Length: 345
Ligand SMILES: NC(=O)C1=CN([C@@H]2O[C@H](COP(=O)(O)OP(=O)(O)OC[C@H]3O[C@@H](n4cnc5c(N)ncnc54)[C@H](OP(=O)(O)O)[C@@H]3O)[C@@H](O)[C@H]2O)C=CC1
Ligand SMILES: CC(C)CCC[C@@H](C)[C@H]1CC[C@H]2C3=C(CC[C@]12C)[C@@]1(C)CCC(=O)C[C@@H]1CC3
Image (cartoon, rainbow, N blue to C red; front, side, top):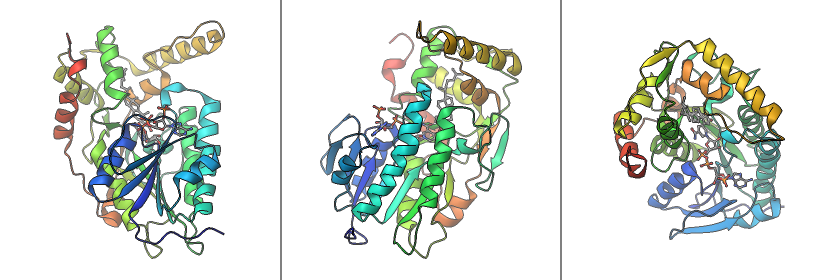
């Protein structure tokens, strides 16, 4: 039987703490007086107040040593969506999350905050002001999303007040900010290869992009509101910037901020989606002989050509959430943080 850690203890663990979101979360937790046990498959930095544990989250024994004396766990580890590796997603996001839950129960952890994704309800067609009561996608757009759905269900169903184990899921969308290895680098790479001249569709589709510090703020609010008498136990919460923006305006602001031209010419959505599907099929057929990663995957085209923005009213009501950094400020800080990706650098 696990010994319960003293409630209110300011020692927490961040699984996936070496990653983009994880590191921002660790830094904010330290500012707020927490000490952090960081668990990740790789080490990317060192900080006073952080104890690093290297391991795979599918390994319960490795997790248990990181969860010693910890009352609160944040689980924000996942393989990158671009890896498109079904077996890896299933192993880490599904079986690995079962292992995380079991390790938390064995170690006497009281609160588990999962980083889920608003994409768990996205099927590649428009979502406008989507609320948390939308059903999970029946046809998720990729393996990443499919396993994020299973992962979220596992964590929310594990919430057990009599056992003193409380869980909550944060669903961010389109996280951006300094040190993001995905959005800005992919965009700049495409621009440098002359692939960012076109707007997919009519360019009016609104989307959420969420500055990383707002996502961190949502996680910490959720952790601090997670008590047996709170309505948030076992529930998912959208966390966004609450400022939907046209997908192509957002991309243009980043590109122009870094010295590249904004996309100007329009291409029909269905044509580009069809071509992306064909390319994906071709790479799948040819993958035993050659490895090739297309920039315009069906998932990226669907995200670039449809509406997908979400309501964060529930987080405002239950968590007192309000974005702490505006979209304009977030874009400015992000652009300033990538001097090495500026045109001509
Ligand atoms: N970025 C976004 O726009 C969004 C992200 N999310 C979710 O937010 C979370 C964080 O994403 P983000 O910071 O962008 O991702 P990162 O890839 O930057 O961070 C994830 C971290 O988890 C590590 N990791 C992967 N597999 C394992 C494993 N088996 N055991 C231990 N650690 C592992 C990664 O290591 P390595 O890099 O070596 O794989 C990495 O350090 C994820 O759960 C993601 O699904 C949700 C919505 C939007
Ligand atoms: C080449 C261009 C058409 C697109 C370049 C930017 C894209 C790399 C990003 C635009 C929207 C982003 C996004 C995600 C990853 C990066 C983008 C596709 C996620 C899939 C990350 C994980 C999630 O949970 C959902 C995100 C939605 C938005």
